[in-house]
Length: 314
Image (tube, rainbow, N blue to C red; front, top):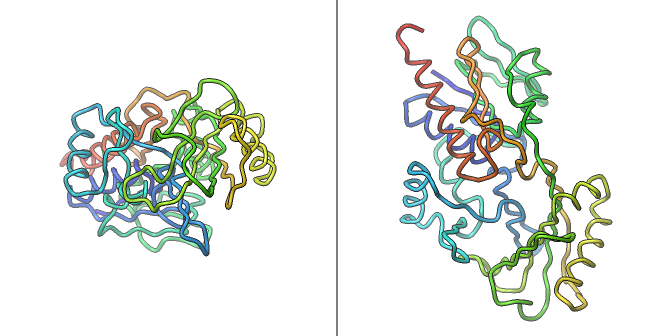
């Protein structure tokens, strides 16, 4: 049987890998230019600069994700970073997601607009036309707001995603001449415009050169959410200089807006699945604001689909 997985972030990748291991044919669709979702790496055109401007690290608490992280660690996909049982993708933060998707049919640059249930199965409409295949089931790995939008556009009902809530985040990517401004891998702040400053070059496998990744706090990001990237870049550069206690002359600076960055309200279920429709959804919005939560949610949805599609009574 063939399953469509919508979204190539960590939850969609976990679902796709688990479905493939169970013997299903999987097609992964994502509107981005690459995979990873919020486990993202930005490469600056015409330079050797790169920034992990989304999720900063992962931790493993439960047995399933601990086993997965141990496998990644053994194969060099992730490496320890900054202590406190924190790990990052080696070379880029997208490495764990790319590893889960190795060998799968992944189609990027594809914007899903609606789902149509036909007697033969699901058809997926995209902005570029339609996906040729028909699918036995669909797994949605989008943020909750985008999941609700797709469900509504398709004239369907899947109760739950609308109760989840996200905080936004503005990220600032900065390259500087000279030494790093502090010796630690990162610094965190409870108050003010800036929530975190990360030394990108402190991460395993990254190029030398002082590069800082700044995450603005949720409330600051909300207040400035609809401002231009140029305006926010200037504001955060001023806030960064104040935090560091020195003027800055960056060689590169650019801001990126994450509209759905950090889960503030999760729905308290591992995933959603309607066996009558053979339609489900997963993501960190199900269990909480952690990479592990997204992985567990995608794995749980895959298990539901496998059990449903292989049930002889179905």
